[in-house]
Length: 606
Image (tube, rainbow, N blue to C red):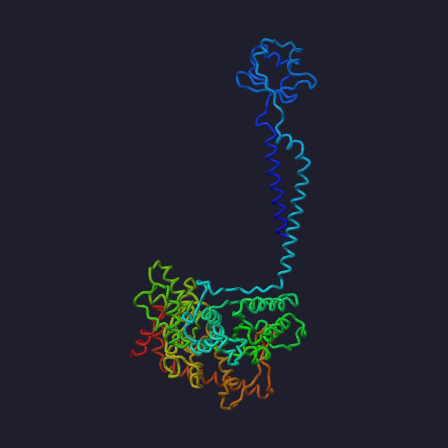
């Protein structure tokens, strides 16, 4: 409708321009003085007229001084007879140039026909635009069930990605090399009786490179690659998603050998039978069609479906059975060697200084995904460009680690003198307790400069990648979390809201020790509670109880015991090393930020 009004306005504007041009063409450029025939005779007799132009009954009298006047004659008589009847001097009349002109063809037709044709032109153009809009809408309606998959052709060198562009995930690449062989040389597998896998499910946390790996498979096999998100199947109208699935697979089969990549398949592949909408809602219809299409592959169909998800636990069992997704490839977070290799890939086109150590960056980024590392290098480049540098140095990249982890610095967030002192002692408490316990990670930085949501932070980075956590590590972590709370109580004999986030994390960790990890001596090796979620939201909303009220009370007691023990540990360390706490806090007030080397020197100082 918006486009229709726009087109109507364009037509009206065009017609107005046309009318203006017609008016300019037919009307004189300047007004001419109209005189009577008697005055014309008088001018002729006075020898003032140079030329008379006759257009039917209209006369244009041009004087010798250049002025032009107009007049009209009688229609029955000619101009000469008319002037003679009025007493013109014949000798003077003979010296005047009489020129007879007829109406031009264009002017005649425009003057006589345009007023009648113009309304019809306006209506015709208006109807044409209306029918055009209707036809366009009809075309959109017919294409409503068409697939919206994006196609990358193998000859597109700019979009082509191979395994060389994917660092880490060695086991996943080895598993997927077989898929490349299936697509390149299907005959050798068919001849021996092997069935080509129907689908591959890539599972892993966000940012681990599932989409990149799928594109690399297509690039290695040199086949077309259809990319679509699971959410693009789902529409308000039931049946549209199923139609798009059929169209996608028909298109892919025509381009076989090919790869169909469905990102975030959990958007349509969730467990059925929730009782929401019965079996006729749009999502389930779409899932059913995907299952049917994957069952429809014959032995010779050289088409591989690759899907990605970070929630394999909520997928429908029918989708995961052999014959549909035969292969399940797990992508883990990269270790230190993988992180270094990923950083090298993302630093290829960056101008790095000679002092840049990617190994040091890899050591400082445990828990970072491939996407986080790409963002880290990009933030370093942006920081260098903002400072008008020609190259990226190590400090730019190190600062970008904290920006990715915590957010940008908020230098405008200025604390008062009292708040700055409280924040300094709070962070000094965290750092001192972390440095005093043996099962904590090394301190890399302590700062009271606001960054992201935090007014200050203590940055602890593990010296090596960890896949398992012990009970001792959790207990020491609880003490570190309560360090700021206990420091405020010890130094100021007052509590502030600055410890609220720490207390929340400590409470959640203590509750997990009792209910999830079985690390409570009293409760024993038992887990408590069942996590529940709304399937159509895909979000944990509650934890159902599978235990009695008596057990719930015992769990609360045990959670409180963990917290109280951690508080006693923190208090003991802070009172024993109070002078060291004051030393660290004063240095923070003075400098606002303490790096690892300076912090270690402060801890060694007597």
